[in-house]
Image (cartoon, rainbow, N blue to C red):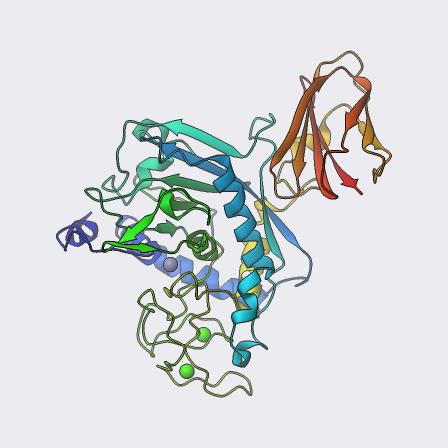
Amino acid sequence: MGALALSFTMHGQDFHRCYTQEAMEIQETLTPGYIDRVNETFERAKLVGTQNREEVLTIPVVVHVVYNTAAENIPDSVIYNQIDILNADFRRTNEDAVNVRDTFNSIVGDTYIDFRLATVDPEGNPTTGITRTNTAVTSFLDFAPLAEGVKHTADGGVDAWDKSRYLNIWVCDMSYFGDVFLLGYATPPDGLDHWPPGAIDGMDDGVVVQYHCFGSNNPNTLMIGGVARDVYGRTLTHEVGHYLGLRHIWGDGGCGEQDGIDDTPNMSSESPQDCDLVKNTCVDDIGDLGDLPDMVENYMDYSAETCQNSFTIGQGNLMRSVIENFREGLIDDNPAVGLGIKEQQDAPFEIELFPNPSSNGQVTISISAIDVHSDVMVFSETGQLIKALTVNGGSNELVVGDLAPGLYFVNVSNEVGVRIEKLIVH
Ligand SMILES: [Ca+2]
Ligand SMILES: [Ca+2]
Ligand SMILES: [Zn+2]
């Protein structure tokens, strides 16, 4: 990989926030015409638009933790925290959303996209949506291309789950001789019928994040240039933006290049990890808003994570159209819980929960498959495993008095299949 080798000759503290654009250029050298297909897909997604902007689209997620040291084996609590941040950022329930400058108030918005750790794996078995793989690989950077080795069991990583049905997120070390080199990269949708486009060395679909940057409660400190950086979990927000088709807000070029989104102000270049609320580097004319300042609050800039708090409505609509038209396997034929699992609908048994909603601390689960051992797992709305037990078919009591009021998913699996029902606890 010539392009990557050049970067390696630079100073040891050379650091890259995101390598998605570089990943696209590497893929282009492997399979010429690739970038044209990505651009064509972007234009088609923009043209078609979203069907119903306020219908929530739920994407099932699997997080693959691939670790060499104990520190890289980040705990479940960090993963849950990161998924909460991802949801808050996409649903605009993040506490710092109020920090966006008034001048942008009319263009920012909820994307109506959310994410849930998968509760059923590709074989139909119950899962926490988290895999853990111990590896002998000390840094995945340097596998050709980029850190793609983390996506392959044969290279010391772990193979993707069905890429058409799960958003695969790998968390690993991509440092360069001990220095953090790269925070993350993602693969944009390229039409996906031909992904990867017949190339053995092609990128595998999904997102890779440096382990220091996952969640806001990560015990590992991100050091860049000898300085500790605030980590708010926004590397993943940014990379999932790319995975769903968004480009950098400055368009990876000067004022002559832009991101293709009509309501994002253009910028001449990326922000250098700062929060400059004064700069206005390109002249725009967005609606009747006139020339807006550079939108450093946008997740698709390289501003400090503490400065970022917004997607625009145009960005949300583009991502929705990408899901509806190019990544539709993530949402089509979903059961009610939106887990992206088709088979569970066909399980040859039924389950029933009553009373539902439950307000007396107890729920009866009735499983029509009599005398079959079943695993019962209760998940929070964001896919966090709350409790698990094994029961026989028929009627069983489930204690829910210890659960906070809210929406839960009850997953019942046994040798004949899987069923999932929503449970509301009052
Ligand atoms: Ca724009
Ligand atoms: Ca401007
Ligand atoms: Zn990026």
